Image (cartoon, rainbow, N blue to C red; front, side, top):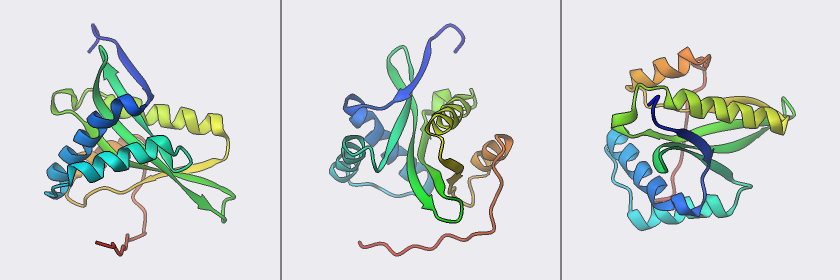
Length: 154
């Protein structure tokens, strides 16, 4: 990667198909779920077009997207600030274990510092994804005592 230029930047609509493809690949790889292509593409575009909901960051090498993540927010009245939730993390197989997630995470932290009212970062990870968990711990994140519950309107 040293000879190639890596750029981390906010995603635009030009990245919509790559982000949808990454989301589909991630869902299949981590949860063995097939996403509906039209739905995920519409969801990606919706977020990009509505920045109050969050944003994507992309990592590009020579203009090609090789990794991405999504950030959404959660207001904390206890802290009078926002938690930024990191979601939809994906690094193309050939680019894994080369520090791309670390670079993306550092960019998230830089943007949060610029905003000023971000009180922390959260993410959820599949219980069996030990490699990702080790990465998050190396970057200073710690497992919480919370369990995640959901009700999905299918």
